[in-house]
Structures are given as C-alpha cells and as structure tokens.
Image (tube, rainbow, N blue to C red; front, side):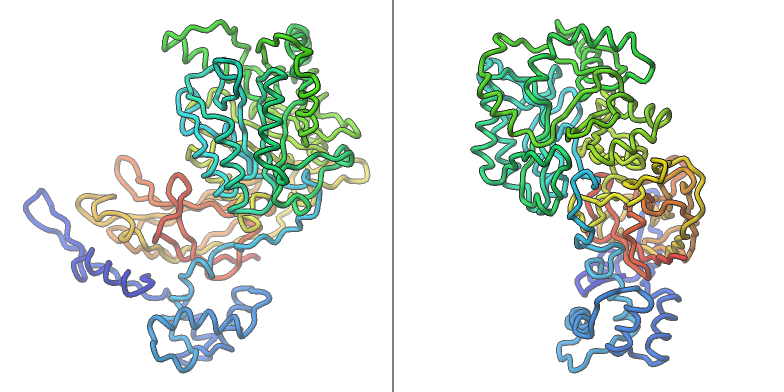
Length: 614
C-alpha cells in the first residue's frame, strides 16, 4: 500500500530488500518475506466491471464508479479529471490523457483526504436554536494532566480549540492577595494560570478549526469586585467577538449559524453567588429530607472536594474545608464575601454578559428538569446523577433538553482524568457532555468519533426524534424495543503503514507482528455488538478479507469503533484505533486512517474497508 516512490524506498530500506531480518538469541537471523501488496480481489473485480473489461479506466467510467458504487453526489467530469491528474502526475511526467490502470485505481482508493470514510465539510442545518445541537465540550479545559496535582496552562485550551472543541471550562479563583484572578482546580495541588492568558489564547485560537461559537463555562468563586474585573477583562479581550444576550434569548437561544465567530459566557448569575453562603445550610437540610433522586449539583465542586480531601490527607495537607458527600446535592461554595454590597453595580455588568445562565437543582434533579417558560438555562449533572435520572425518569431529561441545555461532567473520583461512556447522555439529548480532553481511552475515542460528524466543526445536529413529541407528549425512549432500520455491512480488506510508523521490533523482537482487527458497534443497547477478524501472523501488511453485519435500530446514534491489536501470549499490543459516526459513513470502498491512543492520527497506518447499507 505504498503511496509514492519515497514510501516505496523506505519499505525497501527498512525491509532490507524483500525480507525482514530478526536476530534470534543474538546469534542468527530469521528472514521473513515482505508482502508487497497489490489490490485485493474485490478491487480488481470492481475495476474490471467499471472499465468494461479493458486494462484502463476512462474518466467517464471512473465517474460512473464514483456515482454508482461509491454513492458520491454532486460530482462532475471536471472533478474526476482533477482527481485523476493528482494520482497520475507523479508517475507520468508526460501526461497526455486521463486513464487509470488497476494499480492507479488502487492508489486513488488509498488517498484518505479524498476517499476517507466520512464527509470532511460541515453539512448539517446550522440554523436551529443552540439547544438542538450536541456541542463538543471540555471539562477543566486548562489542566495538563490529572485533576489533583497537574499544572494549569493555556496550552490544553489551545489544543482543544484546534481539535474543534467548542465548550471551554475555566475555574475562577482569587489569587493569594485577593486582588487578581487565577484559573486552577480549586482546593487541590494544581498550579494556577492567569485568566488573562486563558482569555488571550481563546481569542487567538477560537476559530482556527471552526467558525461556530465557543461557549466558555465559568465556575465562579469570586467576590463581586473580582467579578467586575472579569467583566472588564472579557469585554476588553474579546471586544466585538463577545456575544451580549438579548431579551429574545429567554425563549430560545440563537443558532450556531447566527453566532458564528462569537464567544458566549455561561455561568450562574452573581445573585446566586451572593446567596450561596446563606443558603448552604438550608440546601443541606433540603437534600437530607428530599426524595432519593436528589443527588446532583450544578458543577463538580462537591465531588472534587471529597476526592481532593482524601488526596490531601494522604499527602499530609492541611484543610479547613469539610467535604460534602460524594452524592451530589447542591453547589458547594463557601468563599468569604466581605461585603455583599461591594461592587454591586459592576457585578450587574458582569451579570449582563452571561448569555447562558446556569442554575442549580435546589430541590432535586427531577424538579430541576421541569419546564420553566421564559428562562433559558443550563443545568449541570454529574455522570452518576445523569445515570440515575435516566434509569428513573429518562423522558423528563429528553423533554428538558428539547428546550434547555444540559451539561454532564465526570465524577470527582476520576482523578487521573479518565472519562465516562457518553452515549447515555447523548441518547437523552444532553448537549454538553464535558470530557477531560487531556486523557485517553475508549470513552474519549467515542467523543472524538461523534465530533468527526459534520466536518468536525464542533456542533452536531441532534436527530429529529430527540426533538419531537408524540400526540400525547411522549418522547424518545432509548430502552424501547424498536425494529431494525438498516443493516450496516463492514468488510475489512487489509491494513498497512505500521512498518513506516513503528520500529521493526516495536511489536515483537523476533518476528513481524500478528495483527487482528476488532469492530465494535456502540449505541442503544439493542445495537451494541462486537466482532473481530482472524489473526494474521508474521505480516506487516495483513490481509483479512472478512465481512461483518450490524443490524441497527437507531443508526443516528450509533458509533463504529475500530481497533487493531497485535496478538501476544501475555497481553495484546495496541496498534491503532478510530471511531466513526455511522450516520456519516460514506458507502463504498474507503481508506480508514488510524489514530494513536490520544486520538492523534498516524502518518501512514490505515485500513482499506468497504461500507454497505442494506
């Protein structure tokens, strides 16, 4: 699967001609023949079919292949000639006519920028209110590592924005002199970064990847005078980029299209901060006397304090803060307010910058999910609170997310910056599933997969069924038994590129790797499935030619997870992964680039696959 002469030369150099040599016991060599792969049988058959049995394929026949077999739309003969020119020019310096041989046709199939598995440009309707979209959202966006002792920095914020993340979270705390503002994970050992650095970085990188709005969610632990400083900093830093809320926003928020290149602030209004100290005792009493569904808070402070107190105790840290239970109730804010009237006027100015007002579930989750006309709001729940609510009254969550924004954040015990499975939140319409972007693992791969949708712009239009109500007010139920809508057939032909991106002994010191591919379907419970290919032994360029079928009841929310591993007697080695939204898959024979554990694309590693919807 080489793509150019340079890659071919690297193959020969790394493979010492046509063989790989491995030293056994340091005294003799084992030779393994290198497979120089050509097109698989299916590709040869398709080429013959569309070239009418001739050894060359004309532009007209190539156009017919793209339309009929690959399902391409809005493609012209001019587009075709540009594609063929790109493939042919490096190998034919004196190009006089556009025709493909079978190897050149195969070469085209391996170009991931034009024959990748999903569309690369935004194509969803972006004119609906903000509540109608899943939004790519970060959690504690400033942290470089774990939740308790890593550094705070603007660098993770920049990386997130450049990946397409549209929701950035900042925790605001007074500095030691109480005259400035720091961003850090409060009451932990994390080091601070200045708010100015964070805002400046957001301004410079907000729209590098996507033109659609960036939402800054603030966990505000400031006095009114410092809130006034925040108002001044945000307005002076963002200028015309800052969105000022309008009266009409109380009914519904503007659309992503109307908010292009805008920065939106979301937090609790200052009034709630001023009352929080007074209401802590009352709220605690309410929580202890309320029904069993009352275990959520507006932000992740409650859980964080429990986890950080345990951590600090182990490090002999001193703390005067009494942690609340890990079972979330109401916001935990006990910062001193020296004078509630101080900065009242400027605090009002701060309040008027908040476009998406956050609220806390003072009387329990279920009551917080009830409709309150004329109040555009954001509610935050922990992953456990969401799961419990989904089990007990999931339809209330769906109804809430049809009009308001729901943010779901990781539990406080995820101190190593792991993440939770996001699908339950998405199935119930939660717009802002907040993730630790600096981590890695299957949950984060799912997040990456979902937001590869819609050209990676950070906003994905929710399926219509999540926004619709039946004649009796019924809404989508993820647990309901539904008929199969369509079946996705996935064929794994072959893989290549590991020998270019990894050292010869990376997977095995004594022989070439033994690769296999796992194909998993994530979605509603009825659609979940796991498949795997056979193991191909001692081959850097494995050929599987295996097909799997996945019946789908809710394809709109399904994610196709693809993981390649190298078989080992003790523990299999990771060799690449990707996650693809099923609703965005392009049918036909496609090249699928693989990524490392952090979601960064490998330079060369890829699979050749076919996707077919029945």
